[in-house]
Amino acid sequence: MRGNIVYKAKNAKHYGDQNMAKLSSSALLKHTLSSISKTFYPDICHNCNTPTLPNDMRLCKECRNELKLVLNPCQICGEELIGITSTESICGRCQREKRYYDKVIAPFHFCSPLDGMIHKMKISRKISNCSLIADLIYEQIILHQVEMPECLIPTPTNPAKLRQRGFNQATEIAKQLGKKLGIITQNDLIIKKGNTKRQSQLQFTQRQSNLKNAFIINKPIRYEHIAIIDDVVTTTATANELAKIARQNGVKKIQIWACARSIKQ
Image 1 (cartoon, rainbow, N blue to C red):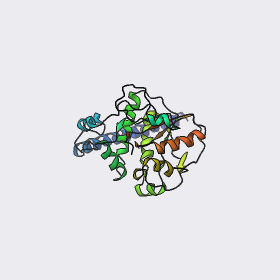
Image 2 (image 1 turned 45 degrees about the horizontal axis):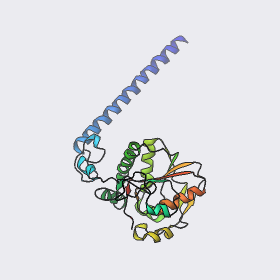
Image 3 (image 1 turned 90 degrees about the vertical axis):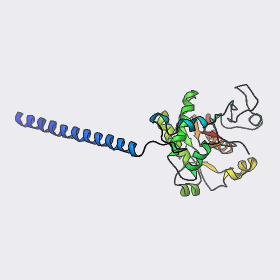
């Protein structure tokens, strides 16, 4: 019996050593392939396609320096306040109109080179740019010590656009942010029930009516503090409609996180 135990122990050690050897070989092969890949296919800037360094995070220094930050944003809608020096200011529209969200965080202007990268992501279906957009949001969220929500909810897209593009960029951005921040992402709590007209083709007042009853609660929202995720915020009509539905279903604090703030039309 004792001999049998010794044999099993030696056998287990033998197979354990074999598994370790296989694991080491696999890791070595992976490292080698990665090194070869880096040599022949180096990291490139997602905007200008020039080679980048490992710490550049998908953007070369030149393109990163061209990103334009929103200075002195409205403390509610995030629109840049021109000619106002106070850092606690609220724009006239937010003083007049009902906002169901608490705050928009959209740190960059929707202009070159960011608009081109977002355009490639959405129109040319360059899904890898979703990670870049998520990185840019993450950096600013951490830099400004933004209060963390319990859940991230991507802005829903209409079924026809989802079939055409193959992915919802807001969902992909939210997933990346969720991983970095350790926050759950749920893309099925609020859904878009129909195919509305494209918001970019409408004026401000038309955008609001276009979204009326466009979203519905699909599952109960069991969170008091959420962040709604998108790539670009323009009039905040979509964000406000989503926030209104969430507020009506018990959510007490709502932030809007996006990468870029566009000029209202």
